[in-house]
Image 1 (cartoon, helix red, strand yellow):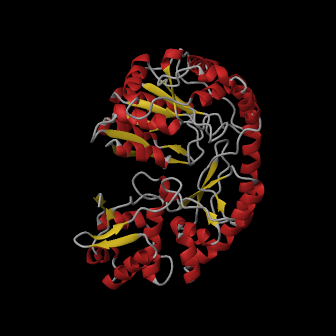
Image 2: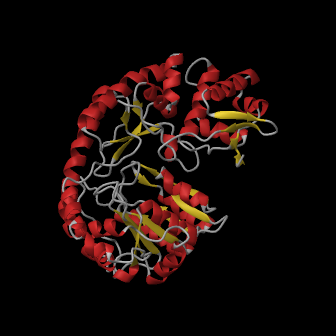
Image 3: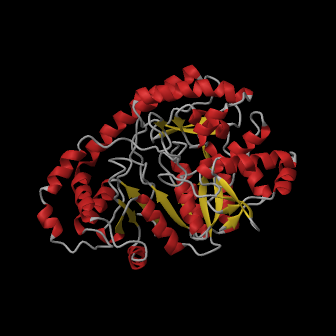
Length: 473
């Protein structure tokens, strides 16, 4: 056992769990989804049956039957002296269920590889003799790649030198590195909610206390932001200002200015995750927003995962030279550098970035328009946005049943992440993230499944035993 979850916390995380009968299976489904989404970590002790029954206002026999169902499906085990404890689940990465053959997997919002990538890889491979002559360990990053990244920022109007860049093994590695260097146990970190869940996980693992900043399809809550900065004095703030994941929203100039000013007053380092910033469909470019150059209180994260290919594990951090030196000094405890071959591929790609971004824009426009059109026809009662960029739709359901819908759709061969997966402090079960990065045929079939599932979930119709088994494998 690594931790415990209280009855009160589990009740809040479950949200509107009672969507069908029997009640014990609805409760078991809710806990299964929390385990699959990694909102309850493996080896976590669940509340005692009587304690949870009181919190949920149900009978103890209902909780006992739910725990029995979870034991039967391999999600929990009963341990003498520890009660019921969640078990590790087989999955490809935290928070994702395994995808059975023939299923539509929309748990990950990542476009297919840029069509020209294979050719660039072949060209770089032809120069492999020069690559393997290098030592291969470089925790700073190849000089030519850091210069290409610096030039990429300069073209955006952000003066940057190669010494202000460190190359990482993807954006997630950059987030982990920043969290390990900046955050001490108990330090507060301001973070959007909803947000990219693996970033929240990284800061929590470093010991941070997360302070949620609400983001909706209408924008950032500036009053809440100013109060949170002033009241909690966070050590850092993690934000996605362009095509935010999962809402697709971008900050206005006023929002950027107000949040940066509040952060400066609080002495907070602002971490801008720009992994989706180049996924513009029809918004157009925006100015960096800083008249006097990049403030020392801003660090930027970038990568090629969303724009080129998720399998090209190259990311970077752009910050002051002092911060970069601190990160380099700490990095060896995490890894010893980004692979040389992937760095060489990235260096060859960046000079052609405008061409890559144009192709991505066309691909994403096709997916977005098809998904929006199909959803508005099939489920007109849902609030379906039309984001100007990014990779997903943050859909508002007409009832807080996202978790129940995801479980029902999973039994029908569609894998999605419930809205609560993206929450920092609970809630968002009225929302569903639907990536539009898959082929149009898959998107339309996925929406047909949702249209079949929703009336059933909305009315609380029972699910068969066979579907229950399929839903949790």
